[in-house]
Length: 194
Image 1: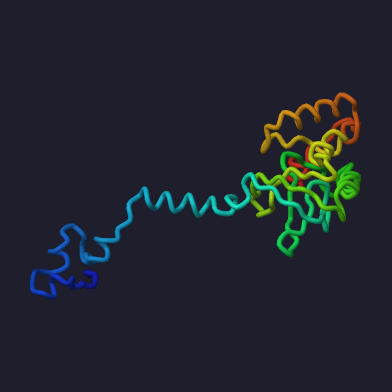
Image 2: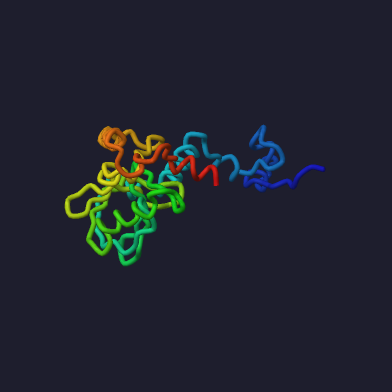
């Protein structure tokens, strides 16, 4: 069954049908289809801009705000523009709830940031929409401090920060924090096993 025939302005003026006027367009050969057919480059550009939009506003940005919550060792809430924003500490992974040193990492992070004005050096957003940032409290790099204390892994899957790698190696060698355990389980492995 053929589709509907649309008459172009040329067809209305007696100069043929829509399909005659725009050869090769089939039964829906209207001027709209012909004139506004977007090219692949334009669609690709729109798609890239749309997909990148959530992180564009945050890339290489710095802001300060009061820390109003600590969910765990590597996730905090900071006030920004009148609302609490979830912030994931960039490049590290603290033990999950139920793992050894989880509550110690949360307590350590709370002591450094809770109730204080902290500086966020934003690097982007994660797949859950949380702001990714290196967090500074009273001049201390909180991300690095957690790794140095043996309360976080350098999250090598998402970070190539040499300082975090060196801090983890030093904490392992000194057997501090979670490195005092015979076989500490990385949170990413622990999450996949749950």
